[in-house]
Length: 181
Image (cartoon, rainbow, N blue to C red):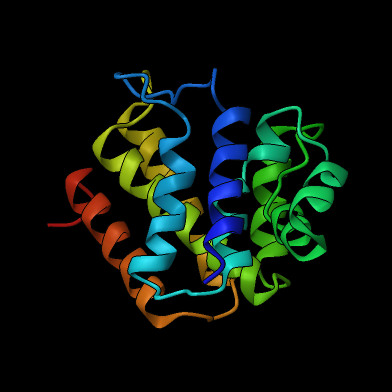
């Protein structure tokens, strides 16, 4: 695996997200999320493609920072840029429309983008279950789980271990949030 590319992506993401915090009660550093996504891909999914791991680290940079797609391409190459763009929401759209499009678009993801999407949703479902954003009631948390399930159900099947881990995170979330006994 190209460790330099991955470390460069981790550094880039850390710099871009340096002033951001998660919305949980602890206001966790935002960078913890993309690192968790990359770690899920490497450990659980046994993903060894450095461009996919780099894209996992960078997956929220276009959407949530001042990063331009051209900057990613110049620094990390066209494939990393492409994967990141595939999983980036258009923030100019209303939230409901963005969520609908994410479900629709999931079936068209490349395998690299589907891996990043799986890691992202595993991480988010786990966080929504165990350390949700402040102010999110049970209904909103359950709606998130249902939406994440719809997105992943529509994704290409690319990694059984990650798909199993997502199913487990979803089930644990539904049990903890009182949907299953």
